[in-house]
Amino acid sequence: MKWKLLSYFYPNEAWGDPEKMDFMLLVLLDKFRGSLPNGCKVKIHRGYSDKNPKSLHYLAKAVDFRVIGCGFVEAEYHLRNYLIRNNLMKEVEYGIYPDWIDPGFHLGIQKDGGTWCGRYVKVDKGGTEATEQRYFGYKEGLAYAKRKFQSAAV
Image 1: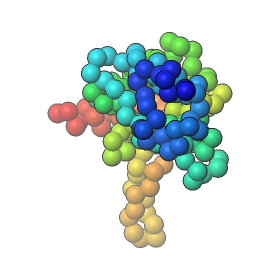
Image 2: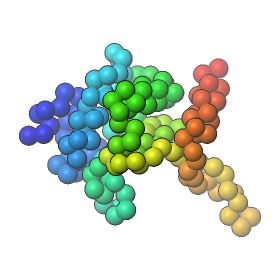
Image 3: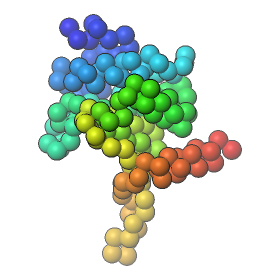
């Protein structure tokens, strides 16, 4: 029934288990999608997941996604401003992931959840170089993303 109340999302997307997804999160995403400029849409990467009981994905209160039809920095601008305009920044956790294969975002329903950036960095593993995802402050991460995507556009 809840899926009939949404304008832009359907149960056959990558929700994990669509029936477990938190309705408030779905409404937030649906309204965000409706606020995007023409030609932009949201592609779901992952919703519910039972891999980590400490994650909001486990509670079906988080989603990872990307915005198609505009660049990462523009999409981040639209998402952040949507959250601010609707007084939602203190109601969600918000992560940006400019280094994903398909750069995107994490959004979860959680009071005072905070903001961050997940990046892939090279680390030394006992004399062997490896790549790990590390977490950085949101402002530092956004500055990194602007540099990364500006150089990619040149």
